[in-house]
Image (tube, rainbow, N blue to C red; front, side, top):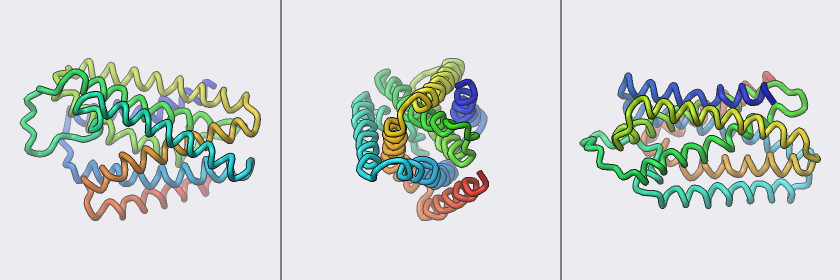
Length: 251
């Protein structure tokens, strides 16, 4: 459990790094989009080969499909709830447009949407990472890389929006460190739950997490990556997928 919690914190550490980059630099939308597109490819590869394929080897197809459906519906419902929490709830990862005057008039409900939305994304990702350690297997470098890369642009966009909402840098740093701690706990719990579950329960949990992550990728990461990275997003997505596939082959 301790090892799983450690790697969960490592995967979420990109949130802290992203905030510090936001405070020190101003990255273009194109750069952020290409980073996100790379993360899309890496996560798709990791979810496929680290979660779905192993689950298919241990259970019937319908059982894996059930887990995928439940995970997808759960994330969808949670994400829609976040989208109703102010203007920034649904756009928590979006940095403002170049023309944004940064007047800081965003509502407090929108800031809360940013916080809850980031946790909603981070908890299943970290739990999946913890699950991958069950059975004595070492950490999946491809899955860890995909999670880290996906968290980085999320923090970039969210930190900009939080600053615009009037949050201080200290408050934002404390927020991200708190989410790192939550992610570490989630990874530890993911490991414990699967380690103490029957084979069928473990398959359902893994496929549930895969469904949640795939829905997040399709609903949020991929559209935003294309919006920012334009026609180059597809190339970076394939690059991320290929790198994660190569890393998986080394494990």
